[in-house]
Every structure is written in C-alpha cells, then in structure tokens.
Length: 384
Ligand code: PMP
Figure 1: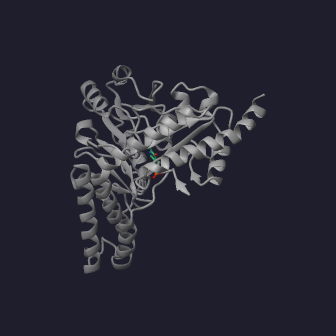
Figure 2: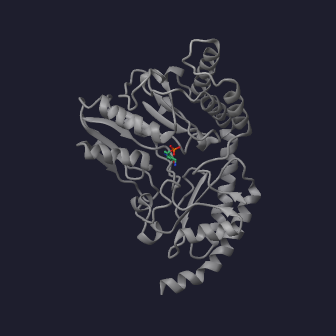
Figure 3: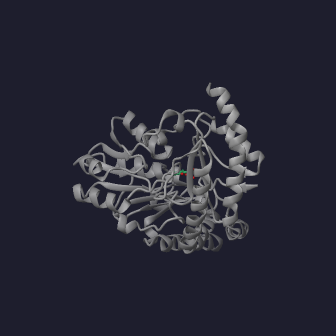
C-alpha cells in the first residue's frame, strides 16, 4: 500500500512516538502541581514552547497550545471577534477556507456579524485589489489560509498582510497555516500575521495537538473558561506529552522543509506529466500550487468509486478533503474556482509526504491509468 493522503494526516516521526510514550510514562504529573514531579512536567512544557517558538521565529509567550487547528481557528476568529467587537463587526475571509474557518464565519454571521467572502480566481488565489477595497474601518479580522487543503493553492500572504495593515492597522490578520508548515517557508513577521494556527498531525506530529500563535499585545476572548493554563486562554490540564512530541515534530519538519520541498517538486512534475496523459482526467492543480497537494477530477465518475478502485490496487487516496469527504455535495472550493459542477463533483486529491520516493510517482501513474481505463465504461454507460 502506498499512502497518498498526507493532507488528511501524516504518519508520526518515530521520535514523536518514542517521546510521547516516554513523557507519558515518566512525566504524568500535572504541570500545575507544586511538588517536584509537577515542576519537572512544567519544565518540559516550557521547553516544548521554546522549541516551537524557535521553529516559528516567535516568542514562547506568544504561543498557545491547543488540540489542533480546528480549535486554534475557532479561538482566533471567535476570540478576536468577541474581544474587539467595539471596533466593528466585519470580518473578511475567502470562499475556499477550511470548514473550521468557514463555519466560524457562518456562525458569527448568524450572530449579526457581516462577513465578506473574497472570490478566488481559476487558480484559487484571491485578487489583492478586491481585498484592498474590502478592508474597512470596522473590519476586525481578515482570515486567509496559507495553502488550500483541496487544491494546494498558495495565497500571497506577505502582500495580503501589507495591504490589510496599510488600509487599517488595527485589523487583525489570521492565517490558517495547517497545510503550509513543513512544506513551504513560514515567515510570520513578513506576513504581518497576528494569529497563526497549526495542527501537529499534519507535520508528522501527534494527533490532538496544535499551536496558535497570538502576537504580543493581541488579546483574545477565551472560549474555554476554567483554570489559568495557557495564559488564561485555554483552561484545562495541559497535554505535556503531546506538547513535547509536537515540538520535536516541529523542529524536524522545519529543518527538513527545504529538502522535502525539492523532492516533492520533482515528484509532482512526474505525477503531473503522467496525469496529463491519461484520457478523461482534468488536472485542477498547477505548477504555482504547493507541491504536496495534487487535485484532479474524472468528470462523470463518483470520486468514491476511484478511491475504492485505487485502494484495491494498493494506493490510498482521497476525495476532496478528509473533513468533507463524507458529504456528497460538490466541492465548495472547486466551485469557487469557477470549475463546472461535473468537475467539482468528481474531485480526487493525492497528497505527498516525507516517505515518498521518486519511483512511487511512476507506480501511481501506472495504477491510475489502469483504473481509469477499467472505469471508463462505467462513465460511458452512466453518462449516456
Ligand atoms: N485547516 C486546514 C487547512 C486543514 O487542512 C485542517 C485539517 N483538515 C484544519 C484546518 C483542521 O485541523 P484539525 O482537524 O487537525 O483540527
């Protein structure tokens, strides 16, 4: 089996699994406890925060440990909306965000907030002039992702940050960084981002662990009340083993990012060449996208059929994103990119990871070509 679903989740580094189990066994004490075991756990947590901060080039005090990016995105969006509602009740985002951003915005709309959903072009990228026009005096937050989880489109974050701050220096800029970290360079200060969320399991770290960067001086209304952990922003006993394991994964991913990027670019080129040659397939990704996400459609075929056909042939792939793959509607992301209903309803995503070798591309293309020729009669039968 070859696993081609790294945008859904990644296998943890061996070091991550070892660290997780070691810390769970040895340092189970509550880091808030006053005894020496508690102090040892607190020290590990402090160290984990320092390592994560160094990987992101930010201050340790600017990081909040979370359960993942769904929580981080909720905390960033609703937390800033509630904190700064006296500045206005307007938010800007795009129509192609992950549900953990999109649904937060929908929820705020139901509470009377105004949300502008910026359109994207055929490549999935926003228009900077439209953004400039959209930022207003009462815009509290702009939330735009780094890399799209379905199409791989990369948003021009440095330009976005510059424009947002030029038009309204008080507007906060949040970046959902989940699909970019470890794959592309991350430059939070250059982007002028105030908030940046990550999920550890997308960069070979543990599941159920994440981090939210909150720029010094930015206040968030806490969504979870209770104890004073995480600067009062996230009450609840800390996941020490998860934090230490995540910090390991962050350091390793950050160190290996340039090498991984170079290998993925080569792999993607081979995959693109192969996919383009298979009759009936429509490639939705392009050379400007992040190299680890490749999206294509087989119009006329329900994408689950392709997932199961490839599974039988030893390849694990996905339809749309894991968070919405159980829904039978067409992809909101592809529709926003102007794709037809047929293309948006037949999307298939493969996503690359550190385990892939160049030879895997040829194997995948061969299997895909075989599957397509076997499935073609089904499309022809159903289509006519
Ligand atoms: N944002 C993006 C872009 C994602 O791809 C995901 C995971 N599918 C999330 C946020 C949410 O991450 P998690 O499920 O780990 O909370």
